[in-house]
Image (cartoon, rainbow, N blue to C red; front, side, top):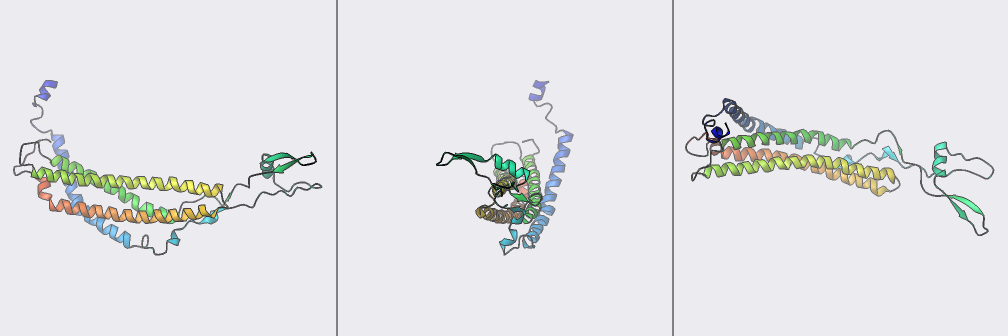
Length: 270
């Protein structure tokens, strides 16, 4: 059975299943290039000109710091003649951070050191609403670019004829276009990773604000980080639009060579 397949007896005629799949891929790819790509270009034009990214004052992107407030220092009002006014939880924190010292006369006394109360939060610390809106707008489009590029890739790969000596100019065009599509798909994938990195890196900054609520530099760093992320997602929108424009242009200019790279219509498998 293995030798029979290797002799080519089972591959002389293309499987009906494979042939049907190829036809579906060809129709789907042509529909996406001719119909979907122009619609996407127009959609990105509206997004970039809309109110979401058309922002002049980046302070509107800033985070609401009021959700993370710095508590007052923990200072019990214990006196020699009266009890402490600290809560039970505060007393436990104080008792864990007391050190014994000896004065010049040899008397032992306790000194409270370290921490202030943990930062107080008004509920869950939310994400930046403006940046989240940008991500929710951009992310589906990134997935759409990756899906469309994947269909174009399989379309071009299935259109490549069998390897022969000479008359390969059309095949080289197919390979060049395929490389362009593959690069576009990889670029879109890197944009997804950028979204993931945004959340993980921002969470580290917010945790710094929670740990050191008295340092305003950490709060300012979050604002700068959000501004940078917002502008990055706006740039991603432009890059996605450019991907559709470039792919539409290169496919339209080389459409005949992509479908029939050689003068004769060879349907052999690549």
